[in-house]
Image 1 (cartoon, rainbow, N blue to C red):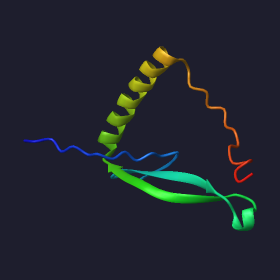
Image 2: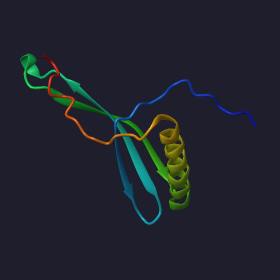
Image 3: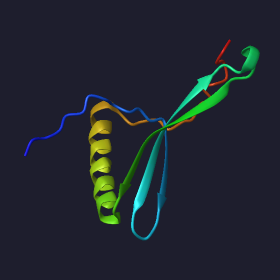
Image 4: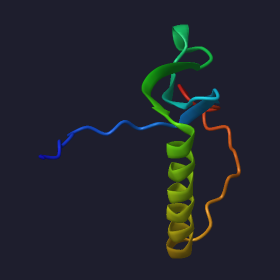
Length: 93
């Protein structure tokens, strides 16, 4: 069986996760600022990037693997800071 190769990457900077008794649905979005009308206040444009649905068992396995990868990353590069900053304040200036 030949493995398919994909030549694209979708970047996501916002993710929502919903669930039901049967599945977890992850909606990966790309949010980008754009200049408002007449150079006014910046607006946010949202693009739906990728939606991934998994069974509860697959989702739990995914989380376990992601947690191990995050732990390895932080051991190598240092702890990731989750401090939130407003990066759209100066957009369009």
